Length: 205
Image (cartoon, rainbow, N blue to C red; front, top):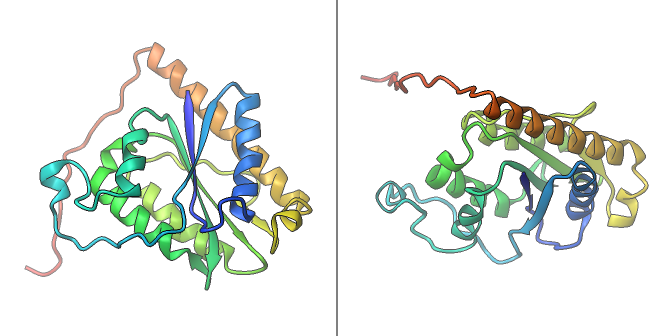
């Protein structure tokens, strides 16, 4: 079993990375393979709603989004992390997730996911809510902890002083591992999900 952890910060080894490392350590202790994927600090184009992905099976802009999608199919769970910018996720990870989930959403269906956010002080709950929307619309079981998945600190060193935040990250790791193992048992028992026909209702006709 493998979990991909996405670092949506422009800082490769910053506060978001520090929080993800705490989760990674816990997952590894639970015999879950991990990889931290950094979306890097180059500009990521936003979705232009061209619909081309429906024809070619991937985003028409061949960059870090398609690079991650190629890995996602073999992963069993996902954790997406972002710093807080003006009480919202970073512009980079927002563009990344918009294009990723629109072009490759089927890769994530019914796979457990979680989001985490880091901030010096405020805006974390709004960011947490924003990022969870991607998971909820893609039928991903959302993994939580005993507090909202956030850490506080202006530097990695300060994050390491946030004992409650780090404990929240570790509990998230334990919960993700537990859920993955439950899914594995269910598969062995032959359990399968039921799919409803997907309907759309337009409010203006």
